[in-house]
Amino acid sequence: MSTRLNTLARSLAAATSTAALALLATIPASAGSSATAQVADRERATAGSRELREIQSPGFLLVDGRYTTIQVPVSRTHTYAHGINDRGLIAGGFDNPSFDGPNGRGHAMVLRRDGSLLRFDVGGAVATLANKINDRGQVVGGFNLTDISVGVPGTKGFLRGPRGLRVIDVPGSIETQALGVNNLGVVVGEYVDANGVFHGFRWQRGRFTTIDGPGALGGAVFDVNDRGQMVGAYFTKNGGARGFILRNGSYRTLNAPYGPIDLPSDINNRGQIVGFSLSDPGGTQSHGFLLRRGVGGPFTRVDFPGTPKTVVRGIDDRGRIVGIYGNPDAAPAARGAQTTPLALPLGFTALG
Image 1 (cartoon, helix red, strand yellow):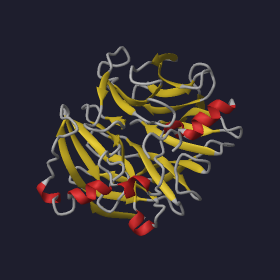
Image 2 (cartoon, one colour):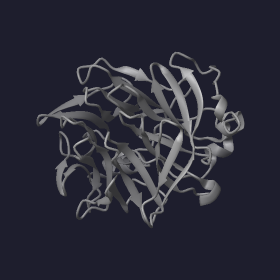
Image 3 (cartoon, one colour):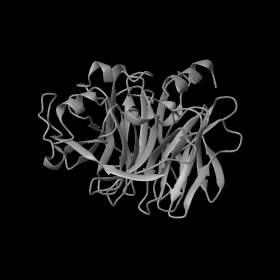
């Protein structure tokens, strides 16, 4: 990979217990930045404005035009909502400087519909992060044994299910991350080879297939549905990145009108696609998008009200959407805190 593309890829980088989940605010999709958050009564004691100001990037759930902020109370920096299945279970993660120290530590989680949280960490890992969950309850993600970040060298992927946890690690790679899984147990993701080049992959029953996208300059695969349709992104010769959908062996490029870097992050079994666009490699601004009618468009913008940074990560077959947003009201101490970087596909980090 060229120095420019390698710089792009890296600069854009980013035991089981239960705890309470705070649903901090529900806001209409049409609300502006001055919208007043309505805090759920049962969480009012732990979801006050002081705590919300400390949160750097909360997760969100979008259902029928209404946004709900998702935040694990023990976390004071990030809560990641990365994937949602048809049972309403949300996969992601959070960091917790309160008991992991000032640098934080990433923990994988699955949020249940009743508001309870299942936390799990890969044994011996410094950081664990869940990316997607299928309708069978299988979870994929990444972990790192030596670094507080997932999506950097040393990261390995995992598939966690009723039969235990299986490590997904492309032979010879310096980094592997499992990003998506369908109901057939097919896993997709990204890996970095010994030369520092990003590649997409498909894994099934222990067999890896490399998928780079058009141009063969490197890329990643972010999700796969039960029909075998995949979404991902590839690097372009001018140093950018473009999203694609791969179906029946044919690639089709996605060109969202919201920025030069497109990352389609999920595709459901109805063919609906969600993702986000970055304004620049540093993610000064990021806007989510939805292709409700599939790859043929049109694009619908998905932005959490009042913030220039929205990252859409998942959609289920009912059209419920999850993601992360940059909290514009975060206190300066929270914005400047040394925290676990947000691991996005291809090492991109749009929130930090």
